[in-house]
Length: 339
Ligand code: PEP
Ligand code: MN
Figure 1 (cartoon, rainbow, N blue to C red):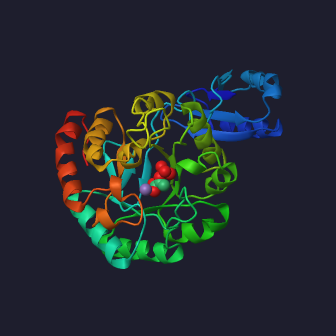
Figure 2: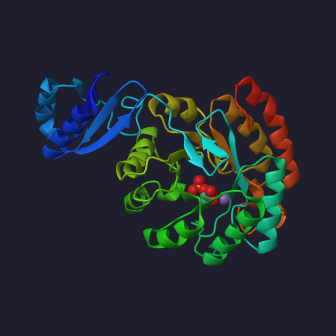
Figure 3: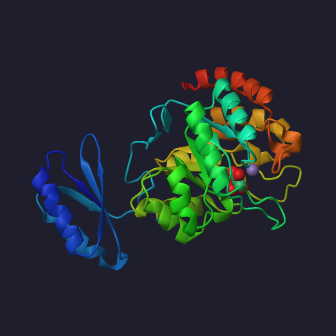
């Protein structure tokens, strides 16, 4: 249920409603808007009628049921868009199109530092790189783990770029959170609820990728897991889904972008690298992402794609990446966005 306070409700009246809602056994999630305060009451649906009684309390305008199962990430409860800030220069969900770039996996000091320097020069504002890799085969390269995190931190030190890296198990959270600026939950873990709950307890932004076969509702429910634990800083990422088509690695569902923007206030970016699996398609799909309203893109860039330890076939080299960013600018201008 949502408790909508009157515009002229006093602080004391709002606090009183908080107390009442908690007394009734519900968790409160306040949203302080410019005009008024709205309180989300999260808990057992069966006790709804008792909350309805709050309509007689001074300062309360109305108590209304939430129709969608995702109460906190849906746009019903919060109309203004969430902006997720990382450091001084990065704001997902603003008028900036945030470009995250870097290799699929961190492989060596030379590789990550050279890539970081080059993507920064071309216009990226966040560095990506996997240290713990969820690979389909147990015999594939699994990542450098802590050494990879150290190398990412070194690249951040050198370039000033904040970093995003994947976390694949709750046990690794203290370690990964110590190094990274944004925690990535990969497609394969989108419904790993134990992991979602744990990252929900942190105050670091979470980049949540859509599962390989997840519906939009399931995707938003996973975001709800994180936000309901207290962490509002979720960035969604459309990265392609499994369909009957095998000519591309996945089918990049760009309609998810404007749809999610209608359904949720969270920012959403696109991963055209995993979305297509083909480096030659990455530029076109990044432009399409900008044109359909995405808040950014995450792009795999490798100094030597041919010899990459993972996902070389979908990685751009730094020159191709610089070319892509150049070609993106007129589209961003037309959309009223900038890098
Ligand atoms: C990745 O970004 O390196 C990755 C493994 O992506 P996804 O989880 O989308 O497959
Ligand atoms: Mn990859």
